[in-house]
Length: 161
Image (tube, rainbow, N blue to C red):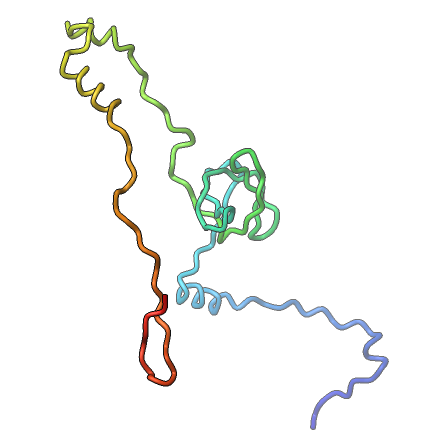
C-alpha cells in the first residue's frame, strides 16, 4: 500500500519540524469573499466596546489600555476594566468629553439687550397655568380579558369567563 508502518518506537522518536506554510492567496480570497476586516487597535485609542450588561447589547465609549493577545484587548470603560475581542470593538469618532458652551448669566444678557428685568404678565400666567395643571389618570374603564377556548365536541370557539 506504500505506507510507512507506525511502530511503538516511532512514537518515542521526535518528528522532524516542518513549519506549516500559510496559504496567503487563499486567506486573501476568503477575507475578500466574507468581507472580513483586520481590526487592530493601539493603546489610548478611543473605541466603542460591546456592553452586555442588563441583558441588552449596546455600545459604550472607552479606550484601549493594552493588547493582551492576537485579538484580545484590555479596555477601560466607565471606571471599570473589561477584556474584549477585536470583533467586540469599534473605532470611536465621538469626542472624548462633550464640551458645554459657556453660559452667560441672565442679568448680563438682559442688560446688554436693554430688556426689562422683570418677567412679563403673559409669561407669569403661562407659568401659573403649568403649575396648576394636574396630571390625571385615564378615565377609561378597563375590562378583564376574556380568553377563547376550543370546545372539542363543537369544534368551535366559545367565550370563557
